[in-house]
Image 1 (cartoon, helix red, strand yellow):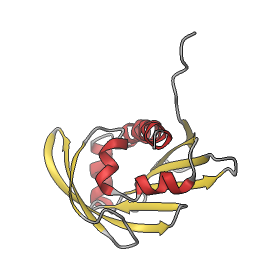
Image 2: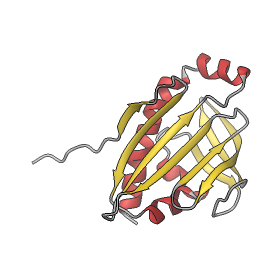
Image 3: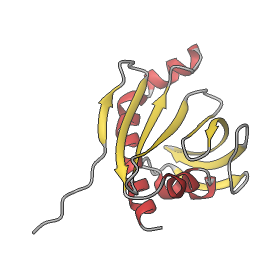
Length: 160
């Protein structure tokens, strides 16, 4: 019997600048949150495969924390991220200079599993950043990346 491919559920947020997906992970919220709150582990769950390494920042994020990443998307570059939302075991979000956000919301299902929703939110981006996102056709691409990242997060968290 062939194994079924794991997929996250992509859903329409009602806002074309916000792309989202969700998945159920057989792990406690704390296990999942600990992975998300450690920027040194983000390359493990990066569905875009653009993160090359963590350059700076704490091993445990908190509200207002900064962390730098070495990235590659056509070219090598470095980016500084800022944690803009942080509620232990429930919500974490960060943004960078472009002001768009990557956000993870965790909902304890009460049975040893957690529903995780990841969103890419471009609605915070100023006009010039919006132009860049549209030029790069980022919205369709990030929709796929959000979905892939959740599948990777599931694999990592369920093997903790």
